[in-house]
Image (cartoon, rainbow, N blue to C red; front, side, top):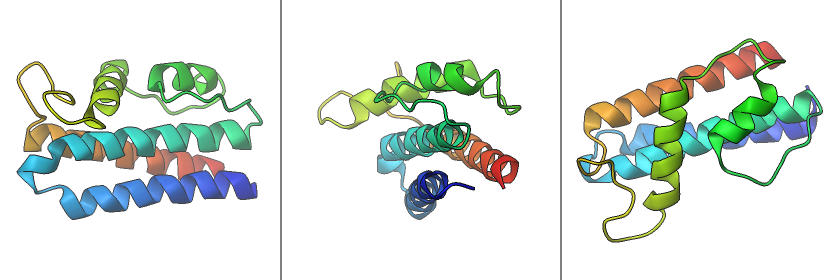
Length: 129
């Protein structure tokens, strides 16, 4: 595995570790979404580096995933990617931003975001090793 690939995977793992520390804190569910989005983004960029696909400077998961989906066997739920993308962009700012139509993500939403990010990270790591 290339060194840069390992660095992307380590960065993704760090985001997952942050989630594990804040997962059960209800007022931080939007931050769980932020770190889940980042863990998936960094995992995708690890694949791109390993497969020598040009890593573009975007945070859009749909755009990034489209670059690897034909050369990588692991799938991601497109609706989840859209949700995380919208929460990622908005959760970085205060006020009413970073919310789903019904408010902040629930603890159940946060757990789903974490589980999907963890599952994708583990799949990427296994596939690239």
